[in-house]
Image 1 (cartoon, helix red, strand yellow):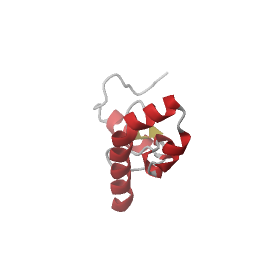
Image 2: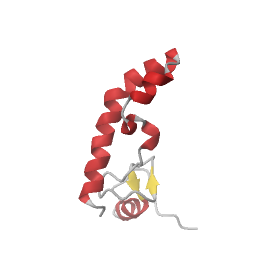
Image 3: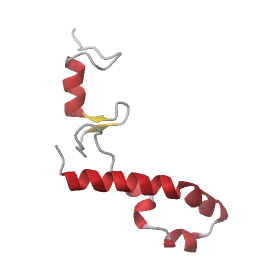
Image 4: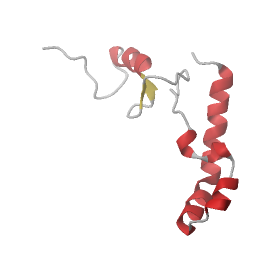
Length: 89
């Protein structure tokens, strides 16, 4: 489980990215990099570190399933992820 402060910061950053997405796209199209630089730093989606939606773990994140490798393994063994089977050969 990640620190609650880090999870809260991540959620706040997600809201900021969503809020400024249209404006950022518009300024990039115009080539107005001065105005782009004046936007909040955390409104840039590149700065965002993806986290597990279940426990907030930042490492071992699997985009396809929106969870970390640990939770993926746990839920795959329980059969709660559709289309995922344990390999055997």
